[in-house]
Image (tube, rainbow, N blue to C red; front, side, top):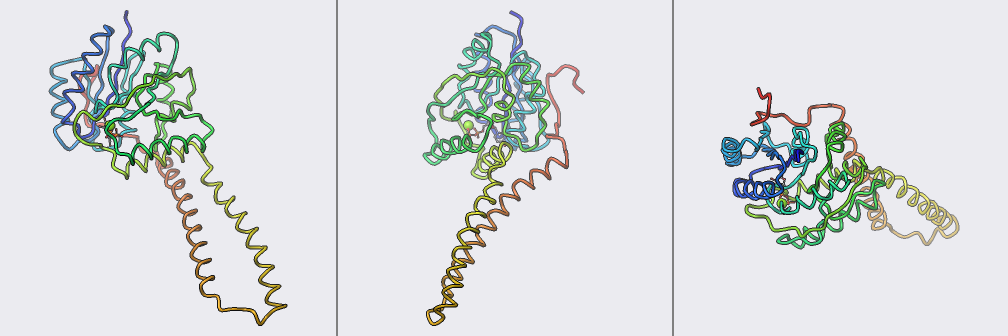
Length: 314
Ligand code: UDP
Ligand code: MG
């Protein structure tokens, strides 16, 4: 069998898991018995991750390394991995062993039976906070209701993609990336494998709330205009209601002038409420404009410091 399978692994401050990830992945890939390459993308780690990955590269030429000049974020790291991958199929997997490598053989089987994308669907999550479980479940369902592209729920970036999907993905150079959504958008024949999400092997999450919110907003803004339409919906409802109220106030003022009461509370309430709505709408517009600005600048997605074990390296 002479296929090559690329495994893309983003790594950010993963010194505690790097060796174990390498060991588990190698074990699985050896069992499958096809040619493979493991591409670690070091996303500007500040701990010993780079050293460890370099040592692994010295030992094993099937392991390749793309070293970023700084932290560019998980989605960009995956993108770089797929840019550098040369296999007929490419597996994207987290570096913390939350996505079990033991699922890769099954993914490859599905791929061989004709699917172009095989994604892992989480049926449960171990060792994650209730807050994360709840927000994730709610978010994926909300996202589905917001977009016309059907992005499968409870699915992360753990997946196998065919070479043609990988090539198509390379054409999409959006800066604020939501890779799992982009792959859905590409189409092709897709199928799911269900799995239980493991606990992190070691270390702690590299997705603080701020990064989670950014990813969540990227998912919505890059696949939907609906938040922008919200302003016009809310605007029309409020205008209609205000108009009715206006007639009521004028009639009351003309025919029953003596009933006019001091109204600072109502004025204050109305003004605070509408200022809140206005600022919220401006914020939504801002989210889109910021992303348009990022696109217009057209900077490269990432900057590579150096690579290891690739052919024709500088
Ligand atoms: N990661 C990355 N850059 C970042 C944040 C995370 O490359 O800025 C990697 C991280 O090393 C891991 C994967 O992305 O391999 C998923 O991150 P993590 O496990 O921390 O996220 P969680 O599973 O908690 O959502
Ligand atoms: Mg994780």
